[in-house]
Length: 288
Ligand code: ZN
Image 1 (tube, rainbow, N blue to C red):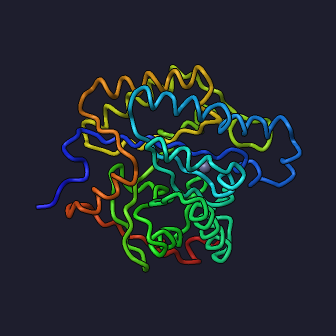
Image 2 (image 1 turned 120 degrees about the horizontal axis):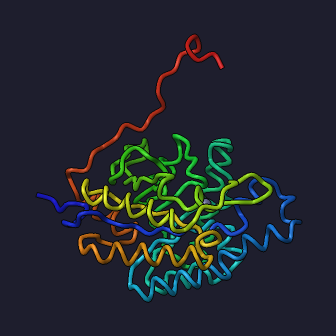
């Protein structure tokens, strides 16, 4: 009998922080580098939000995973290593944050490998990957397997870990969903269009609590995705603190780094294997 991925907890929480900084905006066009206000809005993430979030995690003694684009790690030498030194995991979040669905197969591979080279040069151990904007192609999981990583966290085929069988081997999928992403709640910029609504942190707290309670009933992976440039703001980090306190008070939620959940999932023989191929579509039904 193998160990179960959840280790007996009602739900497992992976707190993931996507340290995107300037990259999602530059992916809309290099010209945004000339927008001082927009670039400073993005730099707030690593410069102000991230230290505040790391302090909160220390205080509550919960581990987390930080998905960092290679470009961000390169621009801010020491950033990735300083996160890992505090006991958290650093993971692969592309090099440039251009979504794989917008790239050719060659471009996707080159961007993927370039990020791995940055982390290798900085001595940062990488075990998993998340596609920029969660816009994975059918090739993405294969790149993850081919480069010896344990897991991907970009797909939505379950709310518990599952196995993706790629041509290059198996990877664990730690699925995501927009309901557990702060981007849909808080992202706002006049341009480019990354979002246009600023929600109340009180509403977000209620959304995440409700989802956690459902996930505790169905023994799920609560895979929270938070961006320091968004949730690092005072009222929002306060809502995050309240949420974490609520989860800790339940007494049946296990907090873990993605790497540790992926290892446990690989050792669980009961994990479902989901097919990983595009649907067959004919030109007559879908002409365009
Ligand atoms: Zn991102």
